[in-house]
Image (cartoon, rainbow over all chains, first blue to last red; front, side):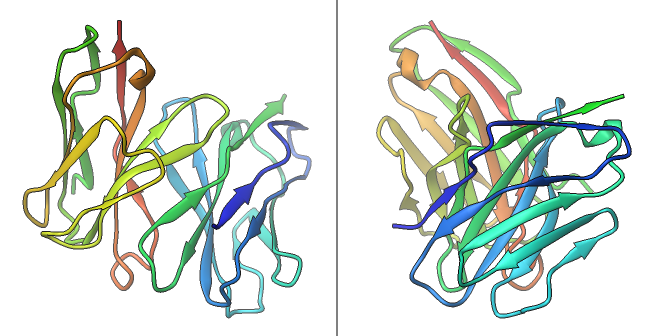
Length: 114
Length: 114
């Protein structure tokens, strides 16, 4: 069965610095999607970034970028120039192309220190 | 443009009581999901529906039932609530083409079972 692991339950970063959140996953599939979702204290889950496994190029969205290592089954999120509004729970998620189920990791709680 | 609407936002039940959590989306998505979120465990899939008229079990379906009433609505029912069902419940919808497999979440329902 597919699993998603986030080995860092909590992380902290100084404002304006860079932080990397780790995610690894287990699958035997070759075609799938990976996501990072953010859950601020408001509890509303929103997408941060999305990666298609068949694309070798790492996805970027403004200050957010990923390091996708398909062979290693690793999908880390880098947040540059961290802002106070980045403080949240971050969830890594996996979805097969041909299947509707989405598997979430346990989450990483990110604190931003002013 | 409401997105995914969940009701109620909060609920307190006594053990053995029943209730239905409502979810509706206005984005014309085929897939809808129910998750529960517990501390340290991320989001766990309870049930999902790939299209109107179909439902499938997720990781933790015991104690729950679902109904995909039409394309817009997907309800979750607790027939006899137990303290172990105290959690935050999220509904989500998605679509491969329209939404690029991104999940759109409701604001969540905080349920306490006493």
